[in-house]
Length: 337
Image 1 (cartoon, rainbow, N blue to C red):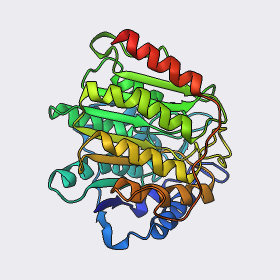
Image 2 (image 1 turned 180 degrees about the vertical axis):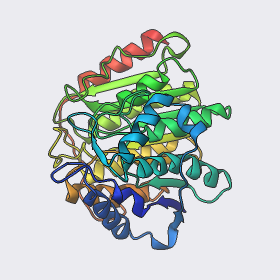
Image 3 (image 1 turned 180 degrees about the horizontal axis):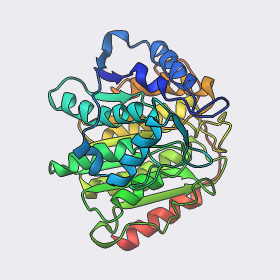
């Protein structure tokens, strides 16, 4: 069974005409959910707003107050990329509360995994700053909540853009391991191979900065040679996936080479890292509506153990660059172990 969270409030966040992170994205996601053929396996999840305590575990009080005030004033730009409307603060609080809601339901045995079709996305949001289309860091709020409960959390970010906000939040925190596979160079310019954490968190950050054109075989090699050994040592209780679908080859903002079939394979491999009932996937990027639909369609069955390839769709890809990055990351991990 798969928990799926949607909410009309997420579509109410409107950054304006022509913005890539537009409400129509959720309609493409809904089409992908419908085409996944899992109607009898889907359990609707009703999210609640994140509490002030949950939000303050990641974000400063000043940041939260500024977002609320901007929404009360009718919205407006926060930076060149990130824009709020009057409903954006309400949508962001609901999106940030979806993860803790899913974790509570999974603990009760309500499903094998969860997929949260939330907006606005979150992984660029820093503790004291909104950026990169993101207002609140949804995955970080959930990870912090779980960590405060004494659990070890692995966050794997497969968005084409590095999740600088998530990395920054947990860079010195040994309770949360952050792994990112992303395009390099690309916005926001963070996520170098050498960024591995500091202090008590040294070794619990792992970056795989891949070149444009990287294909699915490179991602699978990274999981097998770098991420799985790291996960074995870290022994996570939970896996949180920042499920950005902008690594698809059709995405207009990025240059990676994945297909929907690759997303199914990568998701299936990731779900091997923790027991059933301990996986939550959060929607992040993905800006070609057709590709977004196809990727969601391929990903959802993989979250609940349907073998990749069991459904028709785009074939996995191979032959692209990036193997040298995987080898360098594996060598760095071996030398620092």
